[in-house]
Image (cartoon, rainbow, N blue to C red):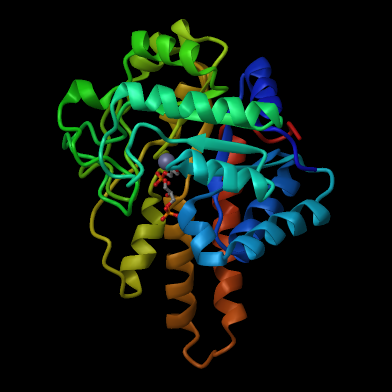
Length: 328
Ligand code: G3H
Ligand code: 13P
Ligand code: ZN
């Protein structure tokens, strides 16, 4: 059944677990997440970016989710708009049936330029007013999701600020977070604590702590009733990188957020954990391997099925690691 994000996150907070929010664009991703959720009895957050709606087309995306709900009536499902760049995008998502929206007012409407704090407050408060009137949950974002290592925003596609260069600008300020939540009434808040979007988070294997867990604690202490969201939470599985490279890919050496650090974050108030890149890497590796090891095959279902199995494994691992398993 389609449920509200607030309901799901409240339950997660009450019982101290986290919920992975996986990005979806196509049938195989939706199916991989739902099969994994059903297998371990976990609630599922399916999130779609503006890019996903552009790729699949709004009706196809909507019906994919409806199909998931129909096929798995016992699994609670949230359909969430990822990184809404304007109030208009959020309203379009609500009209399309989403039960939750993210108003990312940390960036201007171009989704690139850092926005002023006042703009962020104004646009997010507006989206909250509209959304709450129809029972839709709102996630806001405060801070610049970048890389603490390079001091630069994550390198990828459309999501990530170009102007955030100092250490301090990158991290969410606890004081400001308290003010932001009070002024906007958001249900959930995406915070910058050292993660960045995409595959290129860290250039060296993590030694010791890569996230600012201390900052998560400080923010959680100030806004205990607001659910914290961790974007850029892919772990960049080295086994899939190896397969991609073995079968002709060239992603290079790169590292993600260790699952243990996400678990630490969950202990201190993180409830929603955004993951896109890990499923992309698993799908790419599985398809490359399938094509290379079965050169006579020209039935695309074989490679797509391989990608589904690879993504499903990751989903299952995350449901288990974050304590989501058994909570449906
Ligand atoms: O945070 C961004 C997600 O990874 C979605 O990426 O805009 O390419 O669909 P996308
Ligand atoms: P990753 O690129 O680390 O998977 O993060 C995805 C994300 O934050 C989507 O909003
Ligand atoms: Zn994100």
